[in-house]
Image (cartoon, rainbow, N blue to C red; front, side, top):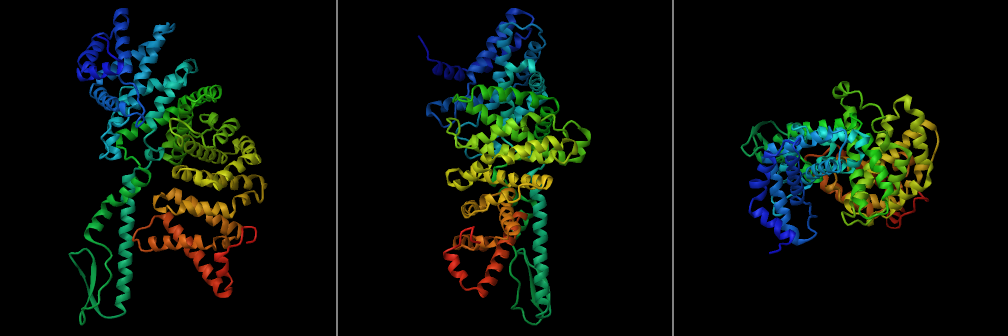
Length: 583
């Protein structure tokens, strides 16, 4: 009887073939010096790779059973540490060989492949009721296991060696899957600590409001203050008890504020941020740091850049491009946060120089990244490449700005900045994206505005260094661009502080740098501002970026109202606004 491969793998899973046969077989044949045992081990590992084959999620309903099976296999490997240790030992043994045969090379490939497969396995279907952190628990457990068993150390050794370039694409993919589910910011800032800090500030705000109200009522009549069981204080007049303060909150609100849970939920929901436990954070941080300090990043980037250039027109290169952009963005952002931590920096000097990340911030790399700022259709994920390209460009520019502070790098950095800002095609490409922002997804829109924010900030720095390009930024000041910024601002509740700050600072740039506040005197913009004021104005807690947005809107509104009293024709201008050239 002949079985199809798919039916065969489902049958093997039901028979518990992996745990009952393959695992014991591998553990009993771990003497690689013996040719027969080595061959048995190789066959076991090859079966591992075939049984954990990666299937795209939501692409084919017939693949759902395999997604569930993969998830179960991932748990199985996590529970059997001895198997992971055996994989590490086999990889280590083969790497020590001076003259490797084709069979040795195939064995190394299979070992890397099973590691990649396990890391790439996604959540099992039906896990929709779980939180992001619950879904990723197995994934992070596997990473910690890889770290504790020194498998990641072997990946970094291979990535740092140019002689092992044949494996670099696979290792690059392994690093991508290790780092893909969290932001590099999460390695330095714990969202729970952020929430706790915001909770304390909120309680202070509530207390200050109560104090202000207490002073207000003190002028009206003599009274005493009573703490009620409802969770708010009320003034009781000794003679008349009809007067009381507004309710500032309930016990439930105060409890949530005190432990930061409500703020934490909002923070995590906006970016779906992952809360890492201490052990996972330590493994991630150690891995990211070693990628930079061991030359792994430098060597890997050079190798992957060559592969992308060689296969750029082939459709299957899109996945490698997405991985490249994500990893460059992640590591550069990690480096930026690391350099802000004086305690960490004092122990590791290798991070401060540009040499370790230089291949990612060359003129050629900027040229190639700018070339990706177009909408690319990809079977993998049509929006991922463009979104990653915006984020990558932002951190490339941030790295250049940071390195420019060192006088020894001045000439090199100036040459890169001159190339970027002298090339009018790059500015036009960004402007074209801003003017046609409706063609982008919301994630792409947010990433674009963040990249533009950094692009203009670095331009400010460059203008200060060279005293050139006066008026270059004026290209970004147009009615069409402001209208599209306001379109994104309409979804302000979905923006985090950093994203909101990019919009507010762009608005202030128009007002303060060019004295063009009249560009905001449009009925559509005023309507958006009014809606935001109506919402945020009644909230008890506001983030710093929300405070800045409120301040800007109030300043513009007050200026508009004062001018309306002097010039009634502005009412007409609100309905039929002038163009930016007429302001």
